[in-house]
Length: 139
Image 1 (cartoon, rainbow, N blue to C red):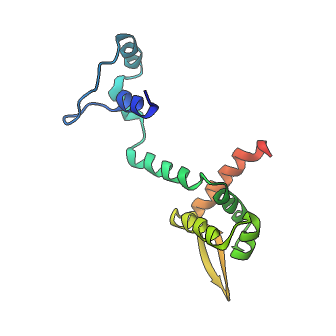
Image 2 (cartoon, helix red, strand yellow):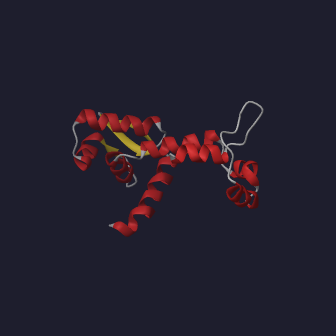
Image 3 (cartoon, rainbow, N blue to C red):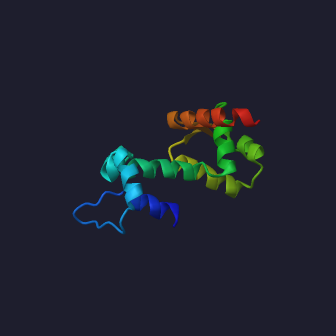
């Protein structure tokens, strides 16, 4: 059984419009009862909206190029010509990745004469620092 289906069956409390698929075996039901029951477990989980935001952020950060961009921008405002050299990718690909980071609210840009400089937002800095902490032991 796929994990997603298992978790849905285990943690989704039956409401007026939901029906429970299958019966939880007695030995499992006893263990779950000690944890507050299915309803108690359901109340402990973050909201679907909150989990959706976390999942979306993980999707944004699921690409090596985007991680490189976020970490490079932790050093300060950088123009596209510098970012392009750091990630070694064509302009169109770089633009694509910068757009994803921008739509996620992790970076912003500002015009500096004839250059467009990118920088991390407060959320972007928090994410970048987390990535640094997570990768510090693997360098």
